[in-house]
Length: 138
Image (cartoon, rainbow, N blue to C red):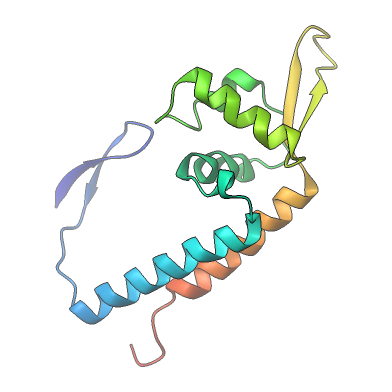
């Protein structure tokens, strides 16, 4: 076992295992295919960025939740808050994210996923899960 750190900063034990070159190739092909499908789904090169992938897939985990912008910055830990704010605005401007006034605090705004974004993420996840399934012959 080997120590690793998750994106959330948690320490976990992972099994250090060597895999065959065949399995490694399958992984690389699946990863490449999954990345290409992301690009096809979003079309715009702006969204062909791991920070958007992090943002959108983490939002999908709680798809019905309305977030404060500042909460969403944590979903893009590799960029500054200023850059995260710019990324959020671009997604809002293109209709992928929806910004509404907070019913509880009229001075605040809340961000949710559009139904179109939710559908695209689910299509991406379904495609990627299939792409990563081991070949029928093991």
